[in-house]
Image 1 (tube, rainbow, N blue to C red):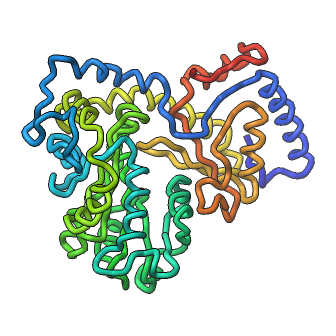
Image 2 (image 1 turned 30 degrees about the vertical axis):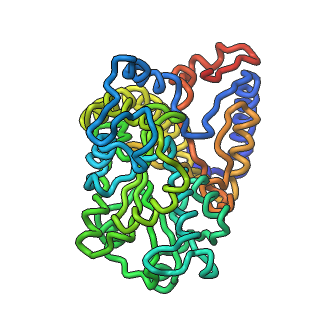
Image 3 (image 1 turned 45 degrees about the vertical axis):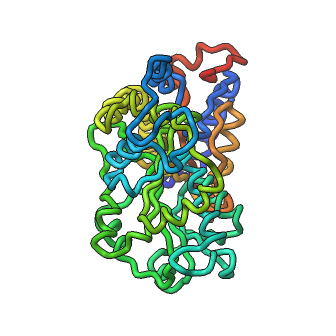
Length: 401
């Protein structure tokens, strides 16, 4: 294959005709391939099915901190569940709040609490004028959506100057180097109530033998006296069942005291049976890590297939670049400026549904219209095998369900 930028007009026109014919062939297959979101596929969900039999009529439902986990109480979660998350996050159990099934829900509640109650002795955010959320992009559209719901101004501008000069800024985590984590931990923002939403969604979701490591932000902020600055979120949504996992947040005692004022009126306690189910199933953090190897066995071939196709079909053409992740759920592809929406539309027409172009930027507006997020997790690997594609008759439904 030849780099398109080195081809003359006649060669490009010839290439276009060939690709157009190939594209019509893909359309004729009637594909229904969904790569729109980081949803676990059926094979992944199946690796946790043994959890259904963990709780029985003979299970002891009494824990050291709860007379009966089937009843009301324990606002911030069972001690054993706190310990499990504390070990995974590398924090003290006293700094963990275990909630329902959704870390996104806990983020929403945290921002709502800051909007209504404030923190660090400052006025509630909704009484302070313009609130700004500073975020790295490409990012997660759900995060952008939460802040937009509260009328918070979202920006993905350069971080350091804005943090130091602005009174109200919220930021969120991406994959950072040790140097960057230390720099974040040492920030001296102008506002006492500055908070960082540290979303550690893919803390242990490795897909190869060279996983990334993220420096423990809580260890670093202890060194700089910034313990109140960080609120860290995680869940088992992509460890066990997305709709029935367990979420947790780690925060300073000051932050937890503020949040509990809200949670105390919001609920009498979250699903402790589900917390106990997870603890009995995993036993400890090592059990969670062992379980993640089952996920890796499912995911690694999917990612390898997608990356191999990108390398084989596009690497020599000079029209796209992409990440080669060691973990997580996505491959981020950057096509030529102004082309992402068109690529996504063409894929949809050919039966391949992708996350909408622009979704990885605030307000759905990619300034370059170039970023596309691929989610290899949902479709089975067999659907990616090129020799098999021509074997499906038109109209065949290739969705996993």
